[in-house]
Length: 61
Image (cartoon, rainbow, N blue to C red; front, side, top):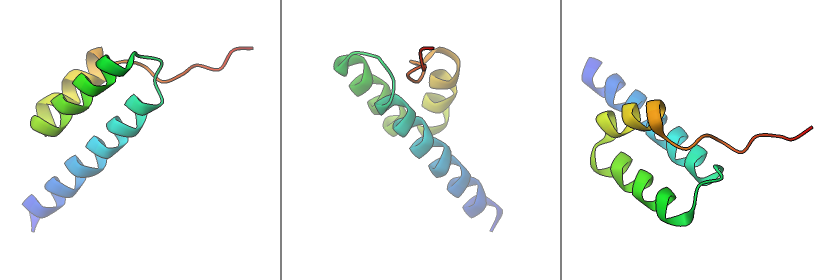
């Protein structure tokens, strides 16, 4: 049961990361690479993206 909850949390975080990557200002090539990293290595890829990944589009005032 606990591993199922952990897997669900990882899935939710990975989906959030992928949606954030789509909304970022990064080039298409970089977006594809980040998404592949997250899909191939879900936990490690998410952590790397969280630290070094493209940030979301920022609103200008």
